[in-house]
Image (cartoon, rainbow, N blue to C red; front, side, top):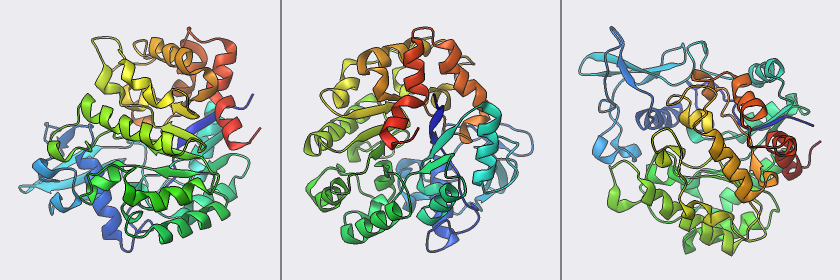
Length: 375
């Protein structure tokens, strides 16, 4: 049985353009992502706690226009640095062992070899670049080990649906395996509306006609509600996103959907356990929807390996959806700041006692292999 990581990354030089018109475009997305991330901000000289206020106006933190001039930059050793009031701060976003600002397929495949992972599906996020050609090149260099998702900038789908669809079609011809769509990217450009509204239909109708799977990352860190602009997201924000997702599923029932990057697991922590509300299952009822897990990237900095607190939740998900609709993924190499690749694998392979051997085979590769037509 193939072991397939359903969620991994490669990226080009983060000090370059990454498919944007200029390096400043990529830098702004990076600065916003780091400003909105839960990793702690620390003062360089003594590691004293800081905050994100030097990076962004916190009252409008989900907007690119709220970014501050902070000499934000890649600083090697997996960290980003900036200046606030003449003082330099940093955030350790990647593992400290990451010396370079790029992460190519050779590095990922070496990690896969060491952990015993047969194949990985490359995901997308604009702060790591929007260049489909780069991802296609990664796949072409390791065709037996890597698959990749296409991406078109979410903020262009309404003003230019035809151009967005042409780029998506081109990416599919390059050998990419589906579309990765990230609704929170719309917030950066001041669009707080639902991403299934009428203005999006020319784009989504075109996507539906391509017969490719769609991978949607829900609002992990940025709220989607205009009424809550500048505030931290809460479970009701996330519930609104799932209602939008359900409407989208009902409109495009024949499109294979993967809710990628898991759900917002931190919302549902209750002491030393996770308690999932009934409404969390709404997008998965009477649909072709899959769910990725990705617990370590969400909770690996909260609970220690082997994440005993989340193991019953994995069993609950498999029981509710069936193992054939559940996909293991890691967020590698980003997750390496908390867990090794092998720990991510062993979390499912060894430690989730509520799963049968058949369940493990499906979650660790069988489900995504069937979806991608590999193996």
